[in-house]
Image 1 (tube, rainbow, N blue to C red):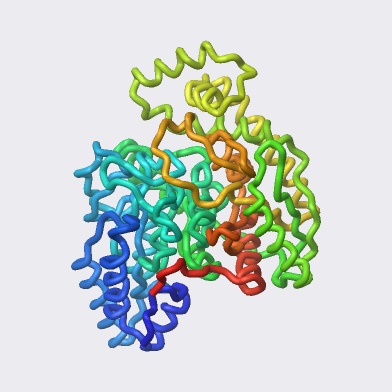
Image 2 (image 1 turned 180 degrees about the vertical axis):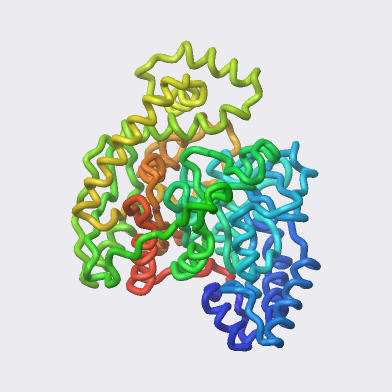
Length: 490
């Protein structure tokens, strides 16, 4: 049969169930692709082909007996290297963890394994998952399959690159400051940032391994787990498997996400927020998003330019305050003290990206409580917005894939409409809108720019409205097209 590597996971699973392709045969197609394509992309950084082959063979034998392991029976997948996978190194890009091999799977990984998935290997991340490009001193730099001189984004950059290059059928990502949505946007794939705390985070680094007992969640504020794929339908399949309470809550709690509020495109009320003076969107991206909105309007969707009644600059400041402090507990004391001294000399009104970061990571508990209170006020404004709109369509990021830059984070710049913009106030500003308010957001491809690079949008929905944003993502895929393989996709 023709090479199956670019088929959706859902179609591959149907092929497996209908015996049009064997699990072992499908695995070998992905292994061959990794061996041929990965050397120039460096997305897949750890593999265990022999274990994968044993599991794929067992999956075929189970089918011969009329047995089905679950919805992902025999599907070859990769896992972001911030999740623990039993028997495989889990470094999170940190040299100190280069020899760390966990004995059990992260909770979200286990959900996929229990559903029948075959794990081929792990995908690359920035050091500690803490950048919007993917490189580290353990595995080096990952490249974008559309242009290897450019980044695939981060922190789920290896995951997005592997999907776009046909090296995996499904991926598991995580998102604190846009780490699913930015790479999906830059590589032209789909990704879902779930509502806060609907998917367990046990076994995700950071925090460092061994800090929390295995029955308790990592307790990371803002950050979530979510799937990445080449089709919106695949995200739905994965979410059905991933959504559940943390281990310690399962004796009493269940998570039943509401059904989509609308089923048909023409019934959706879509708010449109495509640009803003606080974080300008490059015309190449903005034009694609406007074309997408026009396509949806022609298909009957009710689209209106509107946004929540909030101050974007203030929302971003609250977001940075809450997400930056997440890493403070594990920061070496010398580094923390140095940043605290720097923060003490920084004016309260200084909104430079680095100033916001150091004030956030060294803030007092009192200041965190104030920021959390402001977050709850923002959440209320979003809830009021969704009384009139089903979803908001806005940029995932204001630029397309940009050249690799390993310089100091706050010295980097990006070109937006011919002008230099600060890196730290550009790549994750739009993603922070949903992050600070605990909202679900689904990243969808919008097409290719005139330069031939992919760009996408994010569909933001009300808290726990994951099925609504995913439903619209599937409708957008039908109306406007979805994933397109990069050049040299043979």
